[in-house]
Length: 177
Length: 192
Image 1 (cartoon, each protein chain N blue to C red):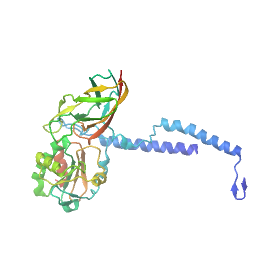
Image 2 (cartoon, each protein chain N blue to C red):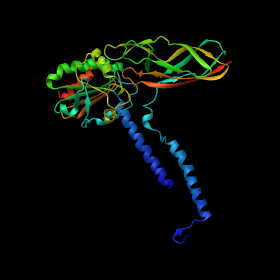
Image 3 (tube, chains in turn yellow, red):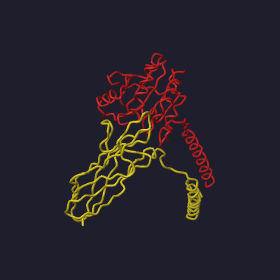
Image 4 (tube, rainbow over the protein chains, first blue to last red):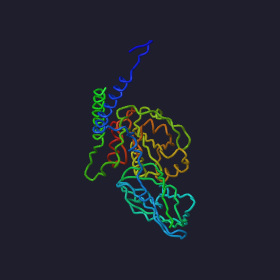
């Protein structure tokens, strides 16, 4: 219907159109899903990290210095330099924790690395972390909830190529009892 | 509208699968007996391969002595453009091989350029110290974000482009390949 140059749509027509759009969405959405169409950025996979924090919660006795471990996992097929790589040009794995109310880090101790021979030429022997590794912390926490905050800087390689240094955010909930 | 969307979804899906098949084909690496196998476990990034058969993007960078070096300076020469970084162990193992090839073939015009991919704020002295330790004498060029984009570099190193005397990319490698494969690429760039 046209009135004064403008097209007037009555409520029945509007409802019918909305129903068609909804029907189309209901039909198309599962088809798109079923065909595996992804709208993700394909470069995201290439930008992925190679280390994860395996545990993000700790329970400690309040007001008492004690040792806890932060557990990290390196993706299978990759390694990262240990805290003390053999070559000073290589980037060591370093955990940096900031001062947060309710929890104090007294000291930290890194695990020893494992020897890893590069699969290039005669092969340089590196000092690395692979699989799971644990950084031991001596902490004193107040009663109640607090949070350990910081970051893990590392640089990952596979057997013949290396990725730029990356920083993993570290956030661990601490429950003082 | 529904039909149009279904057709669009089908075309999208077909094109995506075709692209994935092409990418999968390019990931297949023939490995000789005793060779070190595929050069990287995450060799899915084939972006640099897109330059194969094309004239390499030009660049002007600064070397360790502060002198400007342009790719165009080497017109008529086969050129190896090797991207590396001080923190990259495999890069430091393959660079002495490039030095060896440079010594062997520079009389026949071969040029090798090592382009650092360290952060742009990495002190030049640190890069120079690494170069001295690795023991290479060919030109080392300082980092630039632009070149990484122009060459569509992958997220990992080393990455190398082999250009013939016309500046056309005739070989490309990601990760550190076996030495004999590298020399074959060099010889191909030289037309030998």
